[in-house]
Each structure stands twice: as structure tokens, then as C-alpha cells.
Image (cartoon, rainbow, N blue to C red; front, side, top):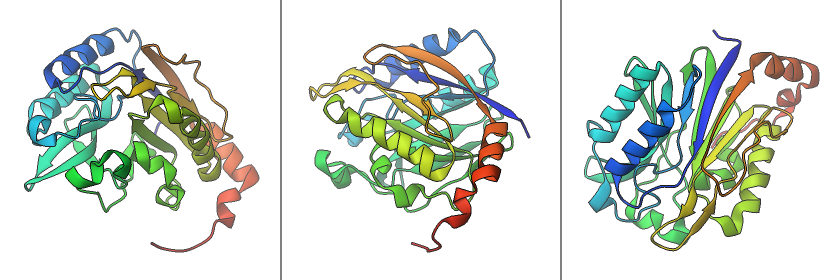
Length: 258
């Protein structure tokens, strides 16, 4: 078990529906990280942008992007995470992948598909939440629109870190900022949000606003919007233990299942 978890978050533009170029771009960005980290987090659909054409861009779990993630994790000795358009069992998923340096893969399928963009019509919705146990830290992965649904993120397992990867558009960025902070406070956990920048082929603009919030809701990452940026932040278990033991807010949570 580690007392600290060092996380690199990469706020980046994405090349529309071009997995090969996006993999190369992220390889270059990852190579520029000049300190050892435990985890690297990329945005939602980091190889394609928020594409509603899965039949054109989807990859299997033994495809090139998963292989690239395994290779990158091994070479950097860091887990790498982000969501990818995946095909399995003749269905399409917006799948969060968490790949460890030893090649182990865990995945979470986005539960709340974005109906406003028609995501629900082309992607299958996930049904299971996931807790990733990595270096003694409990991590819960989520994807973009999941952020608007606090019950799905409810901290019943005493997880330590909540991660949202996203293609969250600029016109609604206030909701992104506000809800990331709220999820950290209400779940008494670190909350990481990694969003893209730039403009996609559908003329949606993205400002990024990637951030890490601590257990009290403080933004601990000085990331400017609208710019590509790599930020390395150190999460401290001592902060989680101190405030959970002192305040004990999670002890008063309501008990229900869904």
C-alpha cells in the first residue's frame, strides 16, 4: 500500500476518428513526462473524439489501442487509463480501460449514454460499477455524462479516488466544474476530471477545465483552459484518513440499494 499516488492527467486536443494519429500524439506527450508517476489518465474516447460512428472506429479488446496501452504501461511502469470505442459480442461500448504495467486490464462501460447526442442509440449502456484496487488505492472510474448522476457515484465502498474522463463541451463547462467539486465533497474522496480541448468535426468546442479536487473540494491543479497541458499531482492518503476520521460524514450516509 502506498501513502501517495502520483497521477499525470493529460488535457489534449483529439484528431477526429484517427486512432493511429491519436496514439502517436499521446505517445509523444507521455514521453515528455519527466518524472515517475503511478497513473496516467487520458480523456474520453481518446483515440477518436466523441464519435457516433462506432462501426467505423471501434476496436476489439485485442486491438491496436489496447496493445498500445499495455506497451505504454509497461514502458512507463505506470497504469494508463481512458475511454475507447470498443466492440464486443457484436455490440459497441464507450469503455473506460485501466491497464496496469503488468498488462492486466480492467474495464468499465459507460452507464449513462448521452441521449442528447444519440449515444444511447449506437452504444450499449453498462450495468456494473467497478472498483479498481491499484497499489492499495481504491479507484472508481466513470465517463463524462455519468457525472450528472450522483447516486451512481455514491461512495458505499469507501473508495479513495473518483475519475471522470470526458468530452464535455464548452457551453456547459460550468456544470462540469461544479459537479466535479460536488462529487469530491459528497463522497469524501479525491475527484479527477480529464477533459479534452479543441473542436470536433461536429463543431462542438471543448475548453478542457481538467482538474483534481481534494476531499474538501479544493482544486489542487493549476490547469488553464483551452490549452494542451500535462499536470502531475500527488494524492495523499493522509488527507483522506485525517478528514474522514475527523468529520465522519460518510458514517451518516443513507443506506439503500439500486
